[in-house]
Amino acid sequence: MLAAEGMTDVPTAATHCVAHEYTAASAAEVSAAQGQQVTLISKSGEWSKIRLLSSGLEGYIAGSFLKEISTAPPPAPAAGAQDGTIDIAGFDDMGVDGIML
Image 1 (spheres, helix red, strand yellow):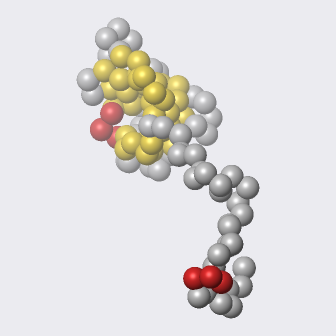
Image 2: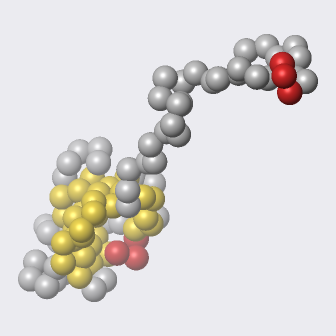
């Protein structure tokens, strides 16, 4: 296990999932189950410092055990779609009849 020196902060918190079960080999590492979601805090070489989303526990894991899910929040809804309604004005003018909503 490497020391915290040389670790680089991740500019945007990225959500990852654990690709393969990882068993901690030291007190600085954290065990994680396959499929568990984590936040990447920092990384250096082959090691990544993570936070388990389920428990908030932090520790190190080999970066090869992680798979990135996202690096940014989901996109905002399209204009006019904030309330979940659909504008159907003009559908009859297009020859579309009998639509049930």
